[in-house]
Image (tube, rainbow, N blue to C red; front, side, top):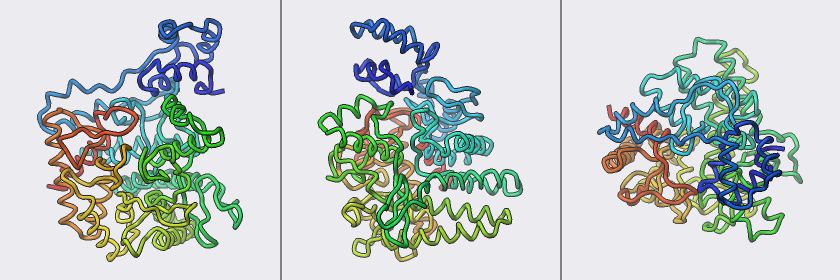
Length: 496
């Protein structure tokens, strides 16, 4: 049995002893959680005060990543430079509570997030490359390789409760970043190629089982006889340990079968990185209608295209011509499928595909910039995307993540660093330099204005009204912040 299944864990989380459910999920047992469970069942605290004393006697808690000492720094660039050492964590030799040991140093996002997050790491690495810290980027990739060896994937983060899911696959992007520095190192190239192939296997587990009647298994979906694409998933259909009471409360009115579906789809949305958004909601508004596993996401499939092209490139460099050709063909088939299934000729934009309805989702989001970033679209499509970004998505502080107005944090009026980078880099690659510069400069202007009043960088921003704090989500907006630092650093560098 796992800690999150224990009576102690469930009782503490349901009691709302901690304002943030993640606090107890991250607790470090003084002896072991089994020892704490035995003590709890023996004494059964009668009230909240007794429970508080019992927990304090059995567990310790790591402090959040506090950055108040940096608030005297006057410029954004100096703040970013000073922040890297504050966000760096040393290698670990053994797990501590739910925190999984990593053999090399790593960078955390900041605030309540005291562990790595998979897809965050790529955007963070942009800033590390800008400061010349290639060694730290290589350490992060080596940590991912270690996690793949241990769990068959790069988990959502290095917490035990994150190992049932991954996040958008960015290992290939980090390998691509390191290639200019490591291309003469045969052993390294072989190591990362094997890791990328293992990641591809993870996303395609069960592919051989698919047929006309059995059309989906975990993360693979048979769209038709010729097309197999991917979706987000989670191997568990239970409340998330790090958001236990929130999930239980949201599912309270559902039947038992509906609860399992709800929990899995909440978890799958976390695998997407977009937790949460109208992209995953059947009614476009209410989280209770979440149906992530019934969407074929445009961004995921574009990143898997990138993974396949990188595997092909690396296999070619290693002299493995047959494997290189195999993954080149897989990438080509995926590219054709994406453009056939996920591009709308009427709207001139990419959309997620709604499997039960058999049609494109109506939700307009910046996930449609990832085809630009990965080179999926042609020049005509790129022009249509650029026009839509300029007319509908571009706001005072940059690009809004999604045009839907819900109370979820990945929808309007919020903007996030990852999508700014996907859009700007993609637009530059297709020659839409003026729009890319406009987005970049609006983001920097907003960041500098907000930094002047707060003295820190944040996880997300209200790009529609930059003078207001971004809302939505299951927790208060966090300071730091890894991917904001990385993307903003890269935007400054593009100004040079």
